[in-house]
Image (cartoon, rainbow, N blue to C red; front, side, top):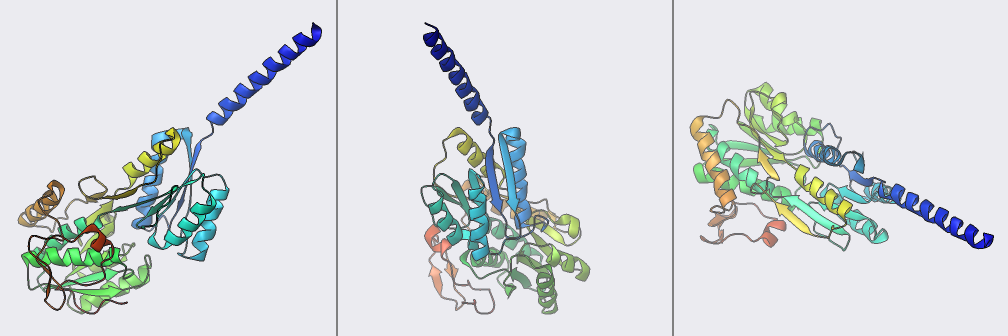
Length: 360
């Protein structure tokens, strides 16, 4: 009898311990890791991704634990960093630059129980999602503003790398600009870096010296805006509202709003509903936003820009609807047709109005 009572007591003790252990495990936070190509203080691309990381913490409190590694070079170093985050128990990892695509795909296969999200790429797996924003929709808005406001009919555009995402933005900008000002042209300087304030500033100076009175950019620092402010010309911010760096020069800025997406995907992991997907959102979904207009933007130009944005949201305008001509003046997209998402994702040619050759 005593033996039976002892066994019952032991079973009860073990059961209680099991419940306590289960409760402890249930309370463990979901760990979310981020890999950034630039510093969190770049005030552009990486800064906005980190704002999204902070939104996760604000939404879930002690239910989550986030971490990040900044200024990670694209390539072998990225693979090491991503694998390290997976090894340290992160449940969800966001890799936030195109050059992280292959390293992310490789590590995802090695850690099938970890969920991965890669920004701007196209390789997916059961535990690897892709996401991006239709930044080119914002480019159509700022192109409209530039077409109305340029006096020299020369716009300077600072590009990072000649990949489809950046080329797509240059083309969307130029198409919108020439709809309102067919005489305006775009000059592009490639800096072959996402974040290099020195190179970006020098590129802005070179473009202004060549007659540009408005500067656009697809790089991450506010250096081009600061040069524009110093030289008395106008410019557009990139990825975040950069008005504080150039209160007179900035006309507006395209804002990358990752917050809702990051919160939604983290919630899916917490609730066990996460599935691999591909997302490409824009103005309509709020992943692309526009900063308030600068004081220099006239009322009629504001209305024209607002009209373009509203037409994109309601579907009556696509930034790449024909007719569209290439640099040689040949119609490559007929009137009534629209460039498909597949062709946009692989875009490797310039539209009419862009000067110079596209680097290969």
